[in-house]
Length: 255
Ligand code: HEM
View (cartoon, rainbow, N blue to C red):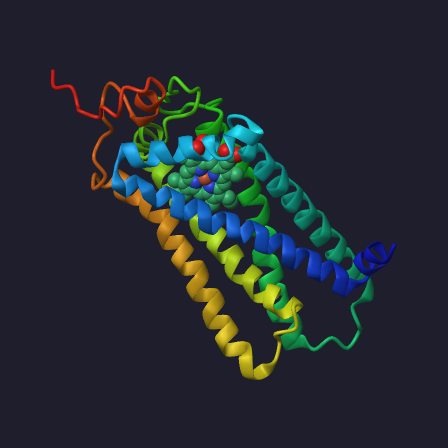
């Protein structure tokens, strides 16, 4: 089939890396924006978490749509990594002997950055899902609501009280953004925007985009750890309230 023939070429692989990278980038933007709900309070972020599961519930069932998104993301993720491995191998085989030194150095720095941050992000991702989505590892108090979902506000607030968890998150976010900056840059190269006139603006766009995502993500652990984000309500949250249809009751019980 033509599509497999195209995939076999180096250009085909670069296009696949660019498309799958874009899907992952779009997820990161949405995830970062979703996390910012924490600044609107426990009710907002927990209601958002519930909404993700209730979306198109009539058609797919509770959480069904989220599973479709997860499958698309996981497929994009696997294809992204696998294609990069193939590309690296292909490039090594086809590298011309008179490859300019300066170019090789620049390519090496970018390549090393991508290859070093990639596996760290992968390890982070596994630990992150086990910590916040499944609650399998609970270094800090973890709360599950009546709907069986981790209570985002409660769990984030408790996790980022611990200095090393907050700072580990901030450090990994810096790596994610370094990865993104190079990734966005090479994505534009792959789709043919490697015109010298545009190179500067592409660099600026990649830098600003990645930096904005860094600020959005890293602000959460930082502002929770520094005490700017207030503690969660003690006895209930929006998800429990919504499911018991009693209306949100977020008052903090004073003892
Ligand atoms: C400070 C930064 C971050 C915070 C505070 C954060 C917070 C969270 C929370 C609370 C959840 C659980 C959401 C729920 O179950 O409704 C979650 C899930 C998840 N996060 Fe993050 N996240 C951060 C950064 C990232 C990054 C950089 C990535 C990707 C590299 C990522 C990937 C994921 C994935 C894949 C899930 C699972 C989604 C699912 O299948 O339900 N997160 N995150």
